[in-house]
Amino acid sequence: MSAELAEAREELRAVARALLAKSGPQPDWQLLAGSGWPGLEVAPGLGGGGATLAEVAVIAEELGRALAVSPFLGTAVLGVGTLAALRPTAGRDELLSDVAAGRRRVSVAMATGDDAVTGDAAPFRVEHAGGRLVLHGQAEFVPDAVGADRILVMAREPSGVPVVVVLESARLRIEPQPVLDSTRHLAVITADRIEADEAALWQLAGDPGAAAEALADRASLAVACDSLGVSQAMLAATVSYVGQRYQFGRPIGSFQAVKHACADMLVQISVARELVHEAAAAVAEGTLGAAAAVSMAKSYACMAAVEVAGKAMQLHGGMGYTWESGIHASLKRAALNRSLFGSPVAHRQRLARRYG
Image (cartoon, rainbow, N blue to C red; front, side, top):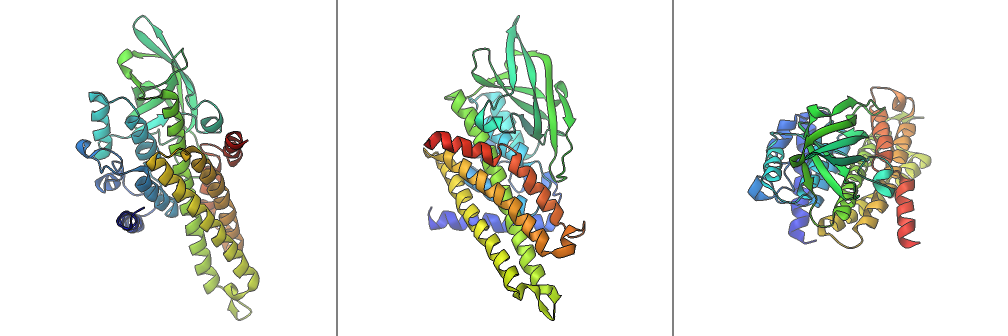
């Protein structure tokens, strides 16, 4: 990576961190859209920034650091990624332009558990009858579907080829799916033999199977970036706290056991950061080992975030278990990230199959 590109990404990080610090835990989506976040990867000709997933990863990391409640994952990461993977059409370009400008929000109905990594990332099925298509299936834990204008449904043709069915959200049954982590908005999307025009079926460009796998990798990488941000926020909060909390006449941060615990957190975060940044670069550049790099980053960074948040809670003592401390929110987000778009076990199994 050139020095100019590295500097640009650090500037993007600084701007994102400042904006999120000013806007609070629930930044207005139009504010983020006005900053160009949804359209980072969209082509300049469609109103986007023409950036890569590596720049999107910077934003995802900062959103995790701030524990921000935002539809960025569903719209900017999955939605834009899915639309960009489709064959270019006037309808696709119009929707991409609307998303980049913040005029529309989209969500992607796809597998979000271990199936996204080890099985079928397209949980819906398409049938054709009398010039119409019939859609049926269900996807659980879909990010940011509630409030989305369009749902991009990952489905398979009878031949097994992955396709995308684009529908107004009102056409599908979308039920909010409460989870322990209150910073994520997830939903169950159900299609009970819904009929639609054939024009609603959009084809993936290139190899459809590879495109569907790449979309799952995008989601896994974004969650890994989020977990890295959570870990970094927990270490910063802990170091600050142990420097201010006194016991036996001195800061508890001066105790050897506390120093060792903070050092262990730093080591885990340093390893996670290297893996996540390498995976982001690999996906952005389309290198041959990108999928393996994503699985390494997802499995390690998400496990590390749970351990770091848990250790932060312990080092905060009794304060760490209170609602006011906010540590619990980070632990819950880290725990959800660990399972979302493939557990560490599923990603390690994927790596074992690759290298076994």
